[in-house]
Image (tube, rainbow, N blue to C red; front, top):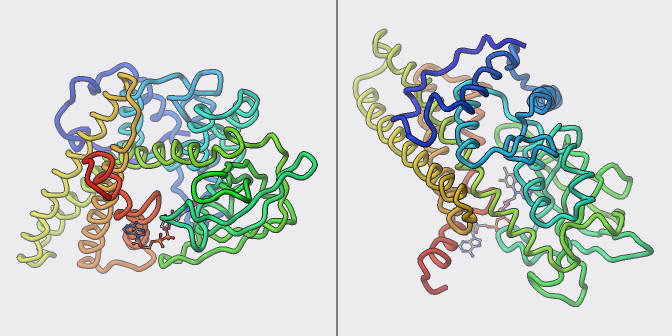
Length: 397
Ligand SMILES: Cc1cc2nc3c(=O)[nH]c(=O)nc-3n(C[C@H](O)[C@H](O)[C@H](O)COP(=O)(O)OP(=O)(O)OC[C@H]3O[C@@H](n4cnc5c(N)ncnc54)[C@H](O)[C@@H]3O)c2cc1C
């Protein structure tokens, strides 16, 4: 596979940063590999074809040892440190590489298994997560337990060596392609709130599980409802000990919230770069009314500065992680900052697009509508602000 997609000028990333230099050997090696291996065909829009395309791409990365560079080599990674990860995501964005098929597995379950999973679980599941052979989904939210996750009512009880799950999950992303789900259940019927929960690993292909897609406003049905009617899970497919599910889920949230910013400043900068090119063309061809032009110039400049702030936040997180610090509540700050920036960039792209006569089935329109969800998933902005107020600033509840 050889790329025909134009790469972006490195200058869009902003000033050169000493610890993640452009000529760093890790960066150079990956950049070269990408040049030889990026898919040359565009990503299909049909959801099933899209997932097949992303699986092929993930497999290619896996075979090159690049699907999860931070993972240990024994599971298919290369033991890269946080600063190398920072550069990895910048290179992916500059090359406009497609997304992976198995984000819930790579970003959420894999790192959590490495912290809380038994060795046999790691050996059984980590390679399939990284290669994209097994696609994962996150079964946390329920109709009356989203922000207030501890209110969840899905139950599991042990019966002759198996957990029997009854209940309902909702907003489960990638459910149309997932083969497995990590499901947070109440396993101690006497318990309340965050006590007595467990995270079970559940194979989805069984008659006791039914799913129903939910259509989103961008016409996608990326998520859905999942009904568990005495679904079965072998007793040992549990992450952590029975009753420790809350602790396991909190570890996962830290990975989830930190990841979204960590991986994304360069992708947003590339989108801004596209928009700057579009402005220049519109200006040259006198296609843009003067008041619109000057308002948009200011907005682009402000958004670029915010992307640079996000880049600095991410770099700081990478430097801290390199020194062994946990992400902690600071992940909420990054998630909050990233999600609002993502929305504002998507809104500006749509505004510029509308001047040009935006089609409602275009990628820009799709991204704009999809971006409304960024301040909801992985914990809403209100929840992130509460975490920053209480855990970072020590304000009273
Ligand atoms: C695109 C998308 C993908 C998702 N994917 C998944 C997935 O794969 N797996 C999964 O388990 N879940 C997933 N979710 C669900 C997501 O985690 C929840 O939507 C989110 O946690 C909010 O829960 P809720 O929808 O029940 O809203 P609610 O919790 O009912 O919140 C409603 C409103 O009240 C506010 N609110 C609630 N509590 C407080 C408080 N204490 N203080 C201040 N304000 C508060 C919220 O901020 C929000 O504005 C996804 C959601 C979206 C939009």
